[in-house]
Image 1 (cartoon, rainbow, N blue to C red):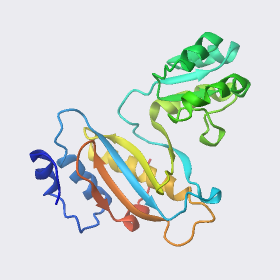
Image 2 (cartoon, rainbow, N blue to C red; image 1 turned 45 degrees about the vertical axis):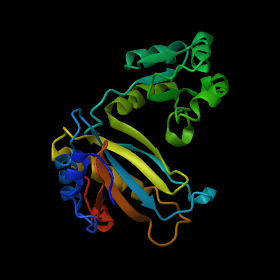
Image 3 (cartoon, one colour; image 1 turned 60 degrees about the vertical axis):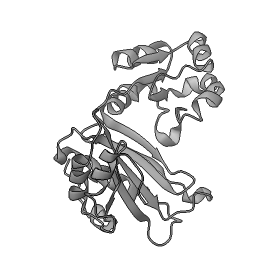
Image 4 (cartoon, rainbow, N blue to C red; image 1 turned 120 degrees about the horizontal axis):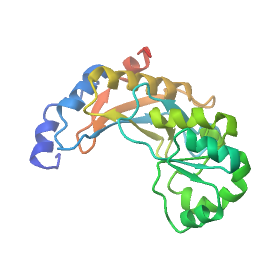
Length: 239
């Protein structure tokens, strides 16, 4: 029996739980069944055919959503000297360039969404692993968040525009936001297509059988809508 408030149950009744919806129809339903007063986030959840216990079946990557996330992304950059200046000019919200900043973060301050670092700073940034690691904020070369100074401006711009890092969890699931329910349907479809294509390309060579086993789209606090994985992977990224 489905449990929830009256509004949730009314939204739930609009969805056929046995059906795999085409992507555009599923996203339209997510918009229609949103019942909260705020501008909810639209989320996509994947179940993948990999075993996260094995190092050669890890799935992680970065997707650049063509229409962004619809929210402000707060960027912190670990850099000194000219690199710090370049980060400030590129629009970084915070530039951690001295020990005072490191002590502040060690004390538990993490009021930012993405942390980027130049390689020269990683000797100091490594001390923050216990604070940043569990929160998914530690700069990492695999995620493309440790870069030389000359590429900082481009990375900061991409991050603020809708660059999303994703990583598989222990249950072989991947969770990625793709925008807001206030987005026009066409923009949600574009973001969804870009995201599915990126996850598909991140398939490990060691993965056998069906890779993308299940896709569900939902809004914050809203009911999930199952998407046909085959149709999702046939979508073309138009932007």
